[in-house]
Length: 239
Image 1: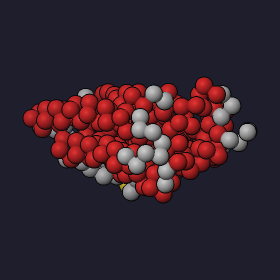
Image 2: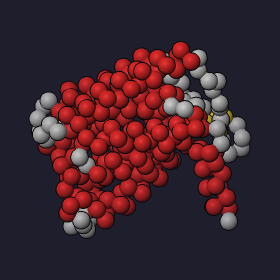
Image 3: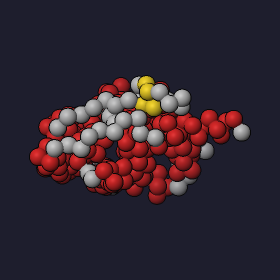
Image 4: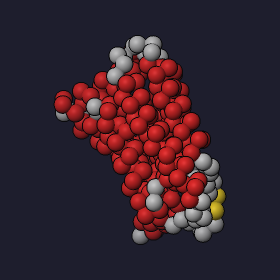
């Protein structure tokens, strides 16, 4: 069927067929990258756990989460070169990865919102999610949205930029997704860990295909901002 053919072509172009293969980094550069990445991962994971442990409505939540973003960005920049990347089109050419990323982010958002409709009926799953959303409910939603966007960019610069490049080529997609999920364990929200795993795998495949962070950043922002605004509605759909 034409629809399935078009979808197959889209997923091959956006997630499977690399548009650009970068040369291996100099061993000295790679050693430096791995050292900086390891240090940043430990500090950033700890800082994220502390930031999300702050009570909803506490004004310290804003600088704390911005501090986490600053750690990710500093670690990414200090580790070595970062690249925006290019996407492969279905026709075999190359283009900006923005449109593909918007579509992929929207698809992931739709899957998670559908799951949230079910989670909204299960108290022990919904409780931690409500606690996380309380920062937006009791704080300033525009400020929380801006911080969500800043953190999304920062996380992709580090996890799909610096960290991805620091891992052995064979394990980059799985390894970067696993470490990204591990960094969220300290939040104590199981569904956030699951979300980080899914998002990490999707953006990791994008990073491998495009050779850069632009596509992952756009996908991350589409998903995270969509979840921020639409998740409360999905959770309460059956209430």
